[in-house]
Amino acid sequence: YYRTIFETIEEETYDSGNYFMMLTDGENWEVQSTQTIDPTDANTIFLIDHCWTFHADQAKKALKMIPGLASRIASILGVGIPEEEEEEEDEVVSDLVVDELEEKLWDLAETYTIQKDKDKVTVCYMMDELGCRIGHSEQPNVKFSTLFHITKQFAITLMWPIHGEIPPDTTISRDVTGGEVDIHKRAARLAICQDEVDMDLLKTPGNLKLDPYRMYGRKELTIPEEVPADEDHPVTARIASVSPSNPLKICTDVDFMADVLTDERYKIVNTEDDADVIFSSEHFDQFAALHESHPSKIINQFPNENVICCKDLLLKVARRATLPSEDHIRADQIVQDKISSGDKDWARTIHPWWMPVSFDLVNELPYFVRHYLEQKEAEEDNIWIIKPWNMARGKCIYVTSNLSKIVKLAYTSPKIVQKYIEHPVLFYRGDVGRVKFDIRYVVLLRSVEPLKLYKYDIFWLRFANKPFDLTQFDEYEKHFTVMNYSENTELKQIHSPDFVRLFEQQNPDYSWSDLDGKICRMIRECFESARSVAPPQGIHHSPQSRAIYAIDFMLAWKGKEMVPQMLEINFNPDTKRACKYHPDFYNHCLNALLLDDIQDIPVTEIA
Image (tube, rainbow, N blue to C red; front, side):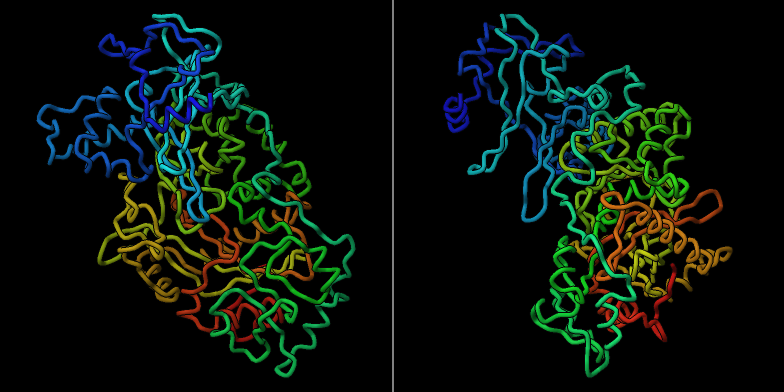
């Protein structure tokens, strides 16, 4: 079989026309066998071509710009193009037709993931007419699998018979779930192609094959069993001895820190062995070894901080915050009970006031599909934003109201889906109009037990470049705010004091100090929840740990009230812009974190 597959691909032998034919009654299509297909015959492994390969956020652009593409996709999807819009070589179709094609193509589009540099990239494709017209069955007679040819750099779909010989004139069918055996996850995946869905099957997430706290390379921590109290710890003695003549020695891979760290109480050194403080952008998990070998060293990370820095685990932390502290240890079961209760507002009740309704698409796809269908039946807003668990800088993020698109993208790499903020507080830009914006607060975690948390009083703004409305979700500069990593896009800069002044002018009934109080309350509740249970569910105290995090959030309207809505928490945030405009940023942050010295600097203790 492998030699046949190799030779078929190398020679690009597309011979399915010798075995199959496509039939239609004018509305529906099916594929039938034209001769006996013997599964023991190695020659009955067929290639199905991909007629279009694309990135999810570029689909509309491609349909509009590539000659002939829209006509072919419309033919496969059964979408009629008005006669006056029939394409010629140098013509494009209307936005209305493109919108309809993009909405429907996800019923048939498929996905796979490839590694590009350090990131996983989602690739979307549509099979040719034969592949797209082989429908779903609970008793399929063929199976599909996508294969990526590394040397030729292209993907192809393999099709082969299963469950015995296929006689002539037999309808060909496949399992569009890819063989999913869990009945709950299977129901969620089939919801996009079936008219009737058993909602009871969507009240449980199905079998969790992997521990959410251990899956996808998440390592088990090595935490020291016994640690002296903070007041007796070697770290405390070392900090007490700090002076310009006995500075804390810092080893860091932040290449520009040496240029901006000017306080005489700190000194940059080149090796970790020589350092009192290790400030690393790489994740660290050897806390037991650090305690045993170097008990007076400080690391810029806390044990198990991934519970707030990974979006799927932050979701669990947020849900815990809705419960009394004594119930945090069994929060997952309580959430499950609420979901299964049948309560009309179950999705909102399991989330705190400061987080949009969200679901982990790896472990909670049935929950999400159920909520989406309930929203649809109630004719409620149903726009969602899909985000990878760990990527930052706006990568691989999609906004859509299309259930098929969400379900297809869910199976490419670990993602969450979050209710899109449909009523954001907007900011008026004189050159553009009223745009989306988000806010970044830098918080400094000094201690977990007891909780000691500072915020940097200067914060950062990111603005969209086009006026906001709930259309054209693929238009990046309308719906996204991360512009500093994109070429040929304007990066709007407003410093936080100027923003506060303009914001209060535009919203005279609202005080920024009141909003700041809500923001600080949101941050406190999140960190209290994160530390309320032991690892792996919670963050762990370590006298040798300090950390800087960036909290990204938006402001949303809830009636006439403005409320912060947390988007994510970032470990090791990009601080180049902070240092560019505020050169003392690291002096201030390290003074608070290492020396508990916040006198005359823009740092405020919030917990």
